[in-house]
Amino acid sequence: MPIKIAIFVSGRGSNLNAIIQAVEDGRLNASIEVVVSNDPDAPALDLASRHDIKTFALSHKTLKRREHEDKILEHLRQYQIDYVVLAGYMRVLSPHFLKAFHDDRGYFKVINIHPSLLPAFPGTHAYRDAFEYGVKVSGVTVHLVDEKVDHGPILAQEPFPRFPDDTLESFSARGLSVEHALYPAVLEQIARSGIKLTAKETARP
Image 1 (spheres, rainbow, N blue to C red):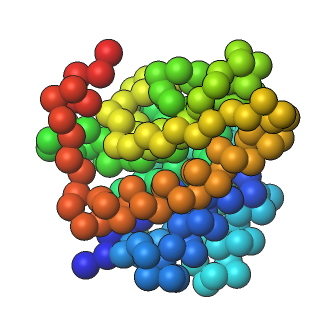
Image 2 (cartoon, rainbow, N blue to C red):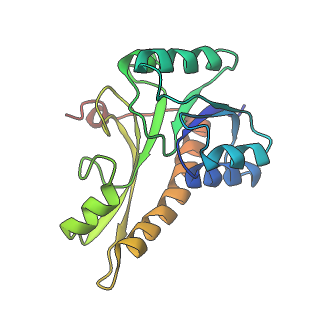
């Protein structure tokens, strides 16, 4: 049985595209039930539509956070979603939203990808922050979402080098290529074996 996922996006959808390609190539046993965005003009919505994937867009700009999330949750109820997958979704999900995807084993069935080796460089501009700090090695993290920003049990991390002649653009592009390989691979592992957390992961400060 494929896992049923809802993918949340806000921008162009490069990770969405990587996941779609993995599904279509048979590398990921998943069904993308719907793509959700807080930006009705997000290019990722057009990408989803070109692959005959259902979309739901609702701007957050005139709504309070609770109202916006409730409308999204109401829409999702028509599907049987196993996991929410965040792929460049530029909104912090509240504990109220996360509670709707609580698992009895003590985590939320919401997955995120972040462009650093967490807990280093949380936040919106992780590639830039890591580059300006002067790291020799950076990386990508896939983790379960919890009530804190860029936090929660880590599912996988993949490092990549910074080269002496790197610009921020080349550094970020190298990271994106890692993202596009790692995210579908982690989702496939979940499709095969479910979520498996160690005591260290569940006790992350």
